[in-house]
Length: 514
Image (cartoon, rainbow, N blue to C red):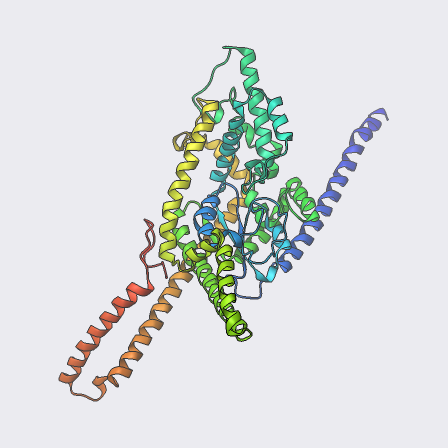
């Protein structure tokens, strides 16, 4: 009797707990599936997804090299006046302002609910998930280390509480996810520095930069921290799905919580992210940098150039029309005064923004790639110098390619496992990238074929019907020789005018179209 009673007491709470867990899973399953079905309907695109629309949304996944695309491609294409305000953090101004044609942001896909859906095209860059996690770890440490120049953490916290000066730039601490990760890492670095001072010389430092626990948080600790589990792991999938802790939709937080609690529900989120990639104008890759840069220039850059050129031409036509109508309403005496005043006004209205628009108005794809090559070198050198200065504060720790290769395989496998959704999304994105390459190549072949047909048609109009149908073999041979010569000249001209050589190295051939 007593034995039975003890068994009942031990078993009862387990039954209740199991039932509660099952109910929680079912509720989460319903929440996630409902969100997934709604998101799939919301993201349906009826028009051609390969055509650039009025607004370009660059979904910048952290540590994918996206800033290089923003600075060296998009800022070359779009003038300052055409860029949406407050890029890289939550918008403070309506993005549908006049002339707002570019939004580059770390905000997740839920941002598109604030944008005119039927007029917005999205692009993004993916990176191998393991490399992205390692880079996120390194960058968190690098930025946090800059604050070690201050005497103590109290001083830094006081500095953070002071209002930051308003300016055109955006601080790293304002940008997701660094506004969460960097302060957390700063606190950790100061704690370790204080502990070293307290111990004096009673500590040793390894030669492994990813496991120097006396100086910085070891990588094996970092990947298991709750904040990293929430923000970094599977970050690309959650960001493209619109489920980060920075999301604009209230239900996104509940969905994210359910998936983090029950990882099997992540498959539904992954399918939504895949659908979003399918519907994007362009998907690039950090690892295939040269190929991605060339594809970006030809898929996105070429359309932006064409779009802005058309807008500029239409504006010129409208301005000329307005001028003609105005002149009809003025007599000859008023015309003289109007012209003088109007010229003065135009001079005052010319700004650096107008100059930017004039400069990129006639740019072609080849020139865009040349500008990119020059710009990317400067960006990388600047980043390298900044990292070197930051790492001085935590010497001898130093993140290099050689040091990264020394990360234990078991740790790499753990990171891979923690980022299973991102691994699958990355592989899916690779197939999209290959399709993009094939499509651009086919478009080029089709363009070549059409232009060759036009050349042949022009030849027939100039020289008459093909001679081999009506003339003797000897005469036909002479005609064919002339046709070959003329076609050769025409094709040579076609090569010079329609196709540009890619200045970037290791690119697949004949892909850059003017």
